[in-house]
Each structure stands twice: as structure tokens, then as C-alpha cells.
Image (cartoon, rainbow, N blue to C red):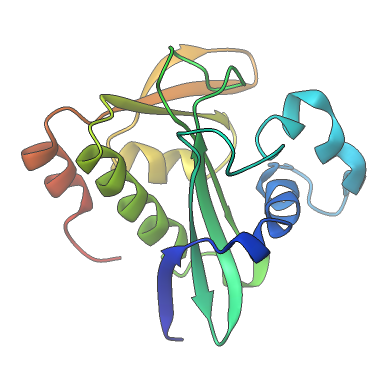
Length: 172
């Protein structure tokens, strides 16, 4: 599968809700959550009026003309908040495309772009049982806070020349 990583197009903004829904970790995938859950204020903050905040950034992974993954960041007070001006990540890859390195490529590209733009750190929240924890650790995220269900993780972007280059080098 040939994959292209590129910035989101305005006409693709409605896809953010679908990918946010898919980003919600469920330990039992056979027990789906109602799709309306993305309208809850604690989740809606990740997509509401996307593109209007100065730090809104989104990359999509496109294969065969279809968006198969997204990574986006916003500077908001949400689950992964660690400080003002620190962008928080959301990563989502369509279920049939998981395990193919798409999430890694999206994360690497966004980390490089954030570092180049001068952001000192980036953060995210992840369910403790979510296998993506390994990906985030491999990319340089460290746990800065624990709750019974989640890790709040941060990645230092200040030493971009060495840290980001080392984290993003290599193959799947």
C-alpha cells in the first residue's frame, strides 16, 4: 500500500469526529460505544471548531485515495493537559489499517513539525491497557502522571537535532 502523509484539507475536517471515535480505546471491541460519545464536552474539545485555534495542526495518512489515519494536536485543557502552549496529540488509524506502521509515521512527522516550529514539549493521554503505549514510549514519550486508567505522557522536543532525529530514525 502506497501511503502519503499530508496536512488535512478543510473539506476533510468532518472526518475528525469519525477518527476521534475510533481513537477511543476499548478493551472489548465487541462492545461498541455510542457514536454520540464524541459530542460529550470532554471529547468534543478535541475537534470543535478545528482550524480556528492558532496551534491546530493535523496530518492525514492517505492510501488509495482514502484517509486511513490522522494525527492532530491542539493546545487545550483536556485529558493530556500538562501546561499552557503544549500541544496535545490525538492519533487514530482505521481499524483495518492498524499494525502497518501508519501511526508511527504520522507521529514521527508531527513530532518533527512541532519541533521545527519551536514547541518545547507535546503531550497525550492514553489508556494504560492500550497497546499504543509502547509506540509512544518508543517515540520518546514518558509518563508524567498516572491515574487508575490512564497515563499522561509528554515528549521533550527542545533538543530536536538529536532527540527527535534519534526517535524518528529507523523503520518498522
